[in-house]
Image 1 (tube, rainbow, N blue to C red):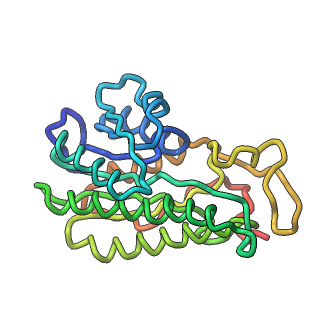
Image 2 (cartoon, rainbow, N blue to C red):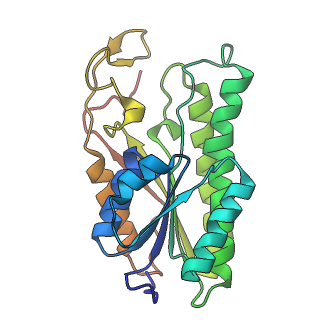
Amino acid sequence: MTPTDTGGRGVVVVTGAGSGLGRATAVRLLADGYSVVLAGRTRVTLEGTADGHPRARVAETDVASPDSVRALFDTVRDRFGRVDVLVNNAGVFGPAASVDTITDEGWAEVVATNVSGAMYCAREAARLMKEQTPRGGRIINNGSVSAHVPRPDSVAYTVSKHAVSGLTASMNLDLRGHGIACTQIDVGNAATEMVAGIGTGGGALQADGSRRSEAVIDPEHVASTIAHIVSLPADVSVPTVTVMAREMPFAGRG
């Protein structure tokens, strides 16, 4: 990463920073010395992540709104003059549904956040990274093991994460000549609110129709992986990485 004049190691924007992987990642990066812009829809949860840290900046943002995302990066430009890293983390699982049961509203919600939101954030980050001096940076898109193997009744989420794979591949091709490295991190069974109940309670729906508890991992392991990628020199690219619970049914799922 290129140091900036912010008093820290660089400027990082984390979307979906109010909970889950976004919160764990933001807290880790603040501890590592970065200035972190915490983006999300709910100020109170973002302030909980910030916890009064002097290098944390709260920015209420709806990633599904291109105007809101533009305002976020205008704020980053005005406050810091640059962005070194975007952790493109915001996402929703949406309704449990198959292709014949998904509603218009359920489909639209997932695509708006997971696909359009990821693209809007990447677009504005890339624009700033290309114009700043020194130019370049790093964008880390949050994918999922569902981008490789789906769960039952997850059509909207699974399709959205396949779209993130396409987005990341296109970004790597189009942005590498501008000093911008792009990563897709595919996470499986990190113990966040999104996967509540998988490791306990009723467990997760399996391909055979049964429900079984599955192994989960602490989100800190995902955060530490992201922190390592962020710390790498600008000429090092990590196109894809998977972090998952060893015992979760992924290899040979179903």
